[in-house]
Structures are given as structure tokens and as C-alpha cells.
View 1 (cartoon, each protein chain N blue to C red):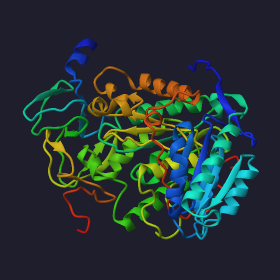
View 2 (cartoon, rainbow over the protein chains, first blue to last red):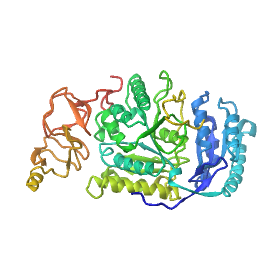
View 3 (cartoon, one colour):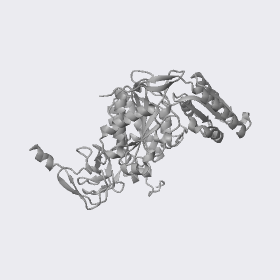
View 4 (cartoon, each protein chain N blue to C red):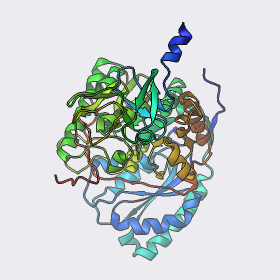
Length: 407
Length: 108
């Protein structure tokens, strides 16, 4: 039985989407512009200015698409692009995309502006004006059904699959029952339970797509000679990738899987979606996601307003652009690192709460965070962002039964 | 009658069998070697220390046999495993991809 909830005071963007934060993104378009972008953003980091970017000088369609999606994310009110000037990144196209969405945006080319000091000065001036402009962003009541929430697990141990992941699964069930969109990811951590996942697909054809995408992940990781498995996972009591997968799988809950999407695809309607994060084609650029933060960025590019992050070992990561809600699986870790955690799911293991109670607590916390309550990682100033090279083909027609995603 | 059955099937709350056909259980607290916990009314003596959240063999497991947790296989036994033994990287391996630990060089 779902309780009626108070409306979330969303930020209404010109493109009709609603955000739960009102931020300015400062994006460097090559590592050579990172320092200047950081100098511009740093003094204003407590006023909702977030630093994001892409380090590579070589072109990459995936990275360009992800930055377009992140800069036009509903939590973003304005964006400043910081370019060195000679990198491959198509800054004109990114700028056009942001301006077309109705957001204030500008690009600052360091080589044209006259070097570091001049660029920093000009960038800060622009930011002051942008911060003033976005203050007048109209507010609009936002229902639970308009929320998009991602789930990842990181720094997993043997308790993750017992407490935090199944609790997150229950929270995702409540979100989906309320009409919201829930996205889970990391097909490399579905290796060993692909049949269970596929059996929950909305159609048999989608189930076959899911199995094919987990097989792709397995091939990818076999080529790399390394599963999505860190030494700390083993030290925390996880023995094999299939054990880690089954524990991770619990975070998906029980809902029907409505679709299979790729980074940057925005789900067309509420429901539970699987995000395929493993690139298509031959292995080209190394590990699919080199760290947890890269997965959060992809979820944000799919429109996630917030991300549930379950951890047993104890991750401190947050994220730029969208709040991260940290759910700690291990009661011993929680006692050591409670200031970094939003939810103590470890108490389930000690008999002080049930999975259903913690699932409900997570669901209610999502609503409170959407209404403006800062998460632990937000309060601690975490604004991690990580974007590297990948290549993807568009999803096939069987991946979204009953409707197209936004182009 | 039903009360008798419940009493005879009592399991220590620190020992969890996640699915009925699992051959390993997990512990909700660190259990020291030599401790005995009830599993469905029968004593299970721990042969090894098993840290919080980790796996213990509930029944004899043959070398090569699938190890089951959450009702699903999580790999195969590398050697015979006795009830009460800690189940981890020393006696269990993936059927998919090798597990990398700090002790094993990645270039092996």
C-alpha cells in the first residue's frame, strides 16, 4: 500500500523536463582545459557550480553524446564549456544543443581568450551572471512518477547481496509501483544470472536481447582477462563473479523489465530498465567502466535525477549533477564510516530491521532528497565525474517493447 | 505437533541458508573455529573462522561439484569441502572468469 506523497518542488526547464536541483555545469572539453575549468568553478562549488568534462583530445561520438545529455539534464540550469581550442571535441554542436534546450550557455576558448588568467576571469564573470539567471527558474510540482532513479553497487562485499541490494530492490519496486522510472546497470555484473533477468523481461524478444547483451559483456571481460571484480570484493568475502552478480541482481527488485537501453537513452515511460554499459563491437578502449563514478555518469545521461549506491566495503563517492544516496550493507563498515552513509542497511544483519522496512526508508529518502534534502555525499562536497572512450551501436527494435525512446 | 517440528528445525539466527537447496550458508556475525551453531535442529561445528557475511559449507561438497547460494550456482568446488569449512577463493572457483586477488599476479 503506497502512501500519498507531497509533491516535489521541481525546477521546470524550457524543454518541459523537471529537475530536483538547479545547477550550473562547467565542462572542460579536453584535459588541457581541466585546470582552467576547475579554477573557474572551484570558488563557486558551494553555490551549485559543478565541474564535469572529458579528457580526451581524440574524437568520440559516445563522449559527445553523454556530455550533451548531462549538460541538458533537468538538474542543470546553465552550462559553460571550457575549450583549449585545438581539441577534437565538437564544442559548437554541444553549445548548440544546450542553447536549443533553452538554457543559458557559453563556450570559452582559452587560446582565443588570452590564456589561463584571462579565461578564468572571464569564466567566473559568466558564472556569476548565469547563477543570477537560473535563480528565476520556474518551479513546478513534480510527482513521484516523474522521477528517474538509478541504482549501482560499488565496493561490494559479502553483505551487499544480503542487506543493501535487496533493500534497494524493494525501494525500486515501490518506485516502479508509483509510476517512476528505475534504471539498473552493469551487464558485466549479471554474468551468471542472465537467465533470471531475461525471464523477467516484458517480452520474449527483449529477454533474448538481455541474454545477448550479458553474453557480450562476458566476451568483453574474457578478452580483457579480468571480471568486474576488485581484490577488495574477495577480501570482503565474495568469491566469484557469479556470486557477486547474484548479490547485485537483488537490487533490481521484482518488477517486469520494461526495456534495455544504452548510455544516453532516456526511457520513454515509467518502469524498470536495464542499462547496457558494455561497448559494442571489438574490444577497443579498455575496461567498460574504469570505476563506479563512470557508471553514475551514464545513469545521469539517461536522465536519472538521483542514484542509489549500495556499498559493503564503504565507498565515499558522490557525483556531480545528480545526488547519490549511499546505502551501507555492512554494519561494521557503517560504524566506521557513518558520516558518509545515508542509510544503514547493515542493521538488518543484526536483527534490528527488516528488508521491507529499509526498502521503505530508502523510498522515502528518495522523495526527501528530490524535495531538496542534501545527501551525505552532497554535504561533504563530493562532485565526482568520470567520462572515457567507448563506442555503441543504437539499441535494436526489440529493446523497447511498445515505444520509442527520445532520439 | 507443529510446535515440536518448529523446535526440532531451529536454526541459529547467526546462520542463514538463503535458499532451501543451497549447500553453503552465510553468517550474520563472525563465527570462530570450534563454535557450534544449530542448523535446522542439527549442530554444525565450524572448522574455520568465518567472517561476517561470508560462506560456510552446510553439507559435504565434492571436488567439481557446483556450490549453490541464493538457490543458484556461484562456481565449482576446487577440492572436497567438509561441513563447517569456510568456502572462499581457496576452495571455490568461478565457472565464468577467474577471480583476481592481490596475492595472485595478473600476468599469470
